Picture (cartoon, rainbow, N blue to C red):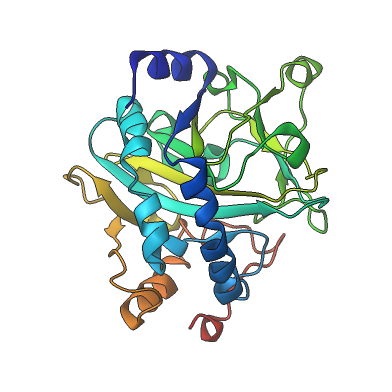
Length: 284
C-alpha cells in the first residue's frame, strides 16, 4: 500500500523506491515468459526496447494493473489512471547497452508534467553492477533541459536521446537499486538514465508510464492511445485500448498495429535521427 512516506519521498526527490509488487520468486518465474515474448516481438519495431506488449500479452496486461503499483501511483496522481505505454528494457550480462540521461516529459508530448509518472518494475534484481536506473534527485523541480541525439551508439532509447550533466548533477547521481519484484516510481521531469551491465546477471525490467486522465497529448494533433487501469475516464483525451483476451489474438494484434503508430508507440520519435518505422506486415 502507498503511504504518506512514499508521497513525501516522491515530492522531495522525484522518485520513490523501493516498493514491492511481486515476491522474488514470482518475478523470476516471469523471466521465461519474457524471453518468449521477446522472441515473438523483437522484429516488430526496430530498437532495443519491447514496446506496448501489454496490448498482446495477457500477463503483461496483468502487470500494468498490479494493485501494489497502482496504489503508489494513485497516491501521486489520484484515483483515475491510464497506462500510456509500457516498455521492457533488458540488459544481458556483460552488455554495453545504456540509457542516456534524459527527462521523459521532454519528448512525450504530455501535459502537465506533474500528472505523468513512470513505474519501473524489476523481473530481475537491478543493482549498480548490472545497470540499474540512476536518477538526479530533485531535478523534477527544475526546468526541462535540452538534449541531443546519439544515433549509432549503444543508447537504448528509441531516438538515442542524451543530455549533458552539470558537475553538480554528476555528483548527485543516485542508483535506484531494486531486488526482483520491487519497483520505483519517478516524476516525468526527473533526470534519469542507466549504465551498461558489467555483471554476469541479466537485468530485465518493465517501464510502465502512467498518466492521470486529465492529461493531454500535444503532439500529432492530440491523437493518442492509452489503457484505463484504475478508476474512470471522464475526459476522453485518449482513445482507450482494449485488454487482450488471449495472447496474440487477432483483435489484440489489430489494436497493437494502430497504437504503435501513435505517440505512445513510436509516433513521437524523430525518425530522421533514428529509424524506428515499423513494417506493419511483420506485426503478426
